[in-house]
Amino acid sequence: MKAVILAAGRGSRIKPLSDNIPKSLLKINGKSILQTNIETIKSCGIHDIVIVKGYKAKLINFPGIRYYVNENYKDTEQLVSFFCTKNEMDKPLVLLFGDVLFRKSVLSGLIKKRGNIVLAVDTRWKEIYKNKRGYDWNRIRGQDLLWGKNSQINKIGNCLNIKSYETHAFEAFAEWVGLAKFSKKGAKLCADIYNNLLELGDSFTFQGEITLACAKTVHFFQELIVRNHTVSYFDIKNPDEWKEINTLKDLRIARAWLNK
Image (cartoon, rainbow, N blue to C red):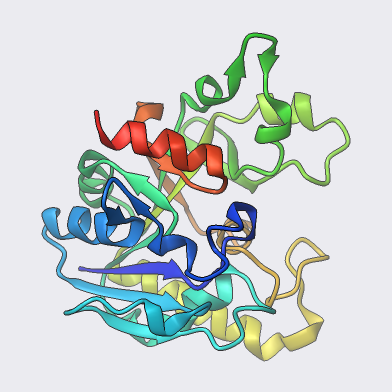
């Protein structure tokens, strides 16, 4: 099995810290986010690691790691970065993000979960966003949520374009934590579908409005569901097992979290 880490973006929400280095190289307790993740990945027995870089690409340089560069990182999103590695999709792999920290138990549990395409999710996600007044809907809005019935995902995305997003978001059973596993069959399926989308060109958009260049990975997962492919999930069962770093506040929380 191999690991693919997406680290092409700049991290504009954490400026000015990302003015001179990629967000994934920000240090927390003496180690960069990427270094911490590389160590966690290796502790799970995965040593074939690929990083997709873009912004300040020359600064990301770890020994023993293979690299792809998304030269168009300024004008593209996660999906283009992911499929920079489509030639790697001949074996099982895990997908991770360069700005998401996670405990070893999250990745090891995901690897063990059976399925061709499996997402690591947090079914206790609402606890993260609860505050004294109820729920922080400004933070919830735009998160990668999942809806479904009987342990089956039938929608993944966010509520940015839904007028009654508070009600709709609350019906979501989980939040995707940014890790996914693909069997050899699942990886090949994704590469084949992406090639098909490239052939369709400008005639195709996700959900009728999002181009390939602007698509995130969740848009692609939703396309798999639309095409009747099964997207399974692994429940991490603990919202304190992962931390996404988007803002200065997130960085402060992550520092304390790593000290636990």
